[in-house]
Image 1 (cartoon, rainbow, N blue to C red):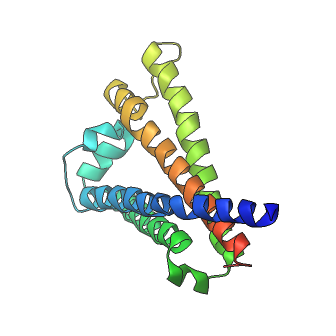
Image 2 (cartoon, rainbow, N blue to C red):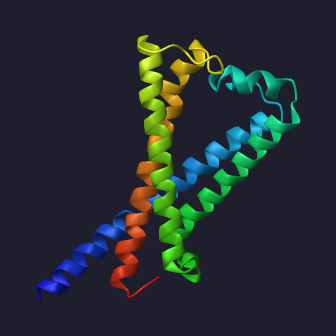
Image 3 (cartoon, rainbow, N blue to C red):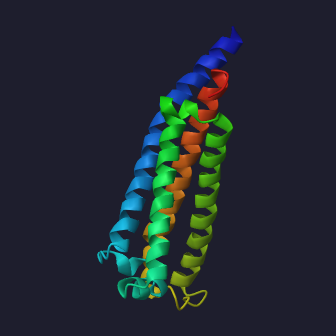
Length: 174
């Protein structure tokens, strides 16, 4: 009896976290759209990234533009992974691959966003010098927008992965 109640609670909790997969995919697709916009020459918000990337990107440097296109494509892949974690068609993918991708993305976003948040907080506080490739304006944008954005992605991917793990575990696998 206790086992059924625990499984029922776990299942309800996992299903109620299904929104996180949709939120994570929205997060990733919006992020990808920003990259594609900048890769196509869009200028709005470009000053928020950092001088080392902004200048060459606006000048049409093919290496920087290729990097921006690639990061956009990786963000689209992340969005598809987020959907696969909560969509029925995701069951066609071995569960361990989905969980590795979901938890891996969450960990990567956490480390990247967290490390940058600490560095950018120190830069904005004047405790360490501003890196030449970043600039003072971009440091503030990173601290108050981009670093928390990465951390939000980490939380959303963790919740979506948790949902997949709990729901798949109860059903005997994805």
